[in-house]
Image 1 (cartoon, rainbow, N blue to C red):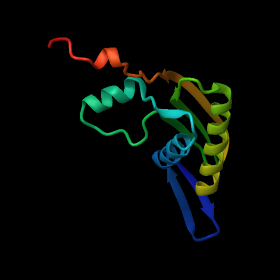
Image 2: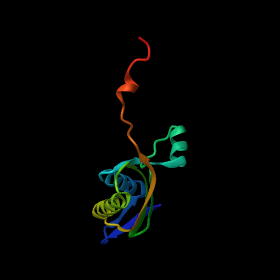
Image 3: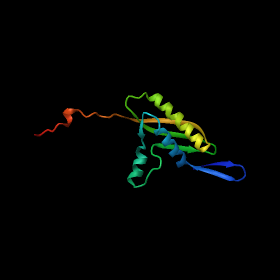
Image 4: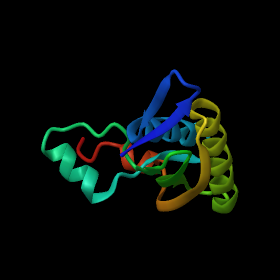
Length: 130
C-alpha cells in the first residue's frame, strides 16, 4: 500500500510504507534507553529465508494523508519505560511528519523486552585449571 499526496496539478507523490517505516525506526533508535527493535517471528522467518527486512520491528499503515505506526522495541534495564515510550512517540511523530508531510495519527509502542547487561566478575574470568 502506498500513500498518494497530490501536489498542485503537476502530479502525485507516493510515499511507500517502507520509507515511513525506516524513518520511524531511525527516529526511535535516537531515543536514549532504546536498545534495539524487535522484529518478532515474522521478521525471523524472513531473515531465515535470506531476505532482508528494511524496517525490523516497525509496522506502518499509510493512507492518503495520514499514517499509523507500531514500534516493537527493547529497552535498557533501569530506564523509566513510560518516559522512554513518550519520547519515542514524540520523536517518531516529529520525524515522520517533517520528512513526509503525512499526519501521524498514532504511534503505538510495544515493549518486547528489557536488555540486562551482565558485568563480568573477577571470579568468573579466573582460569579454572593451573
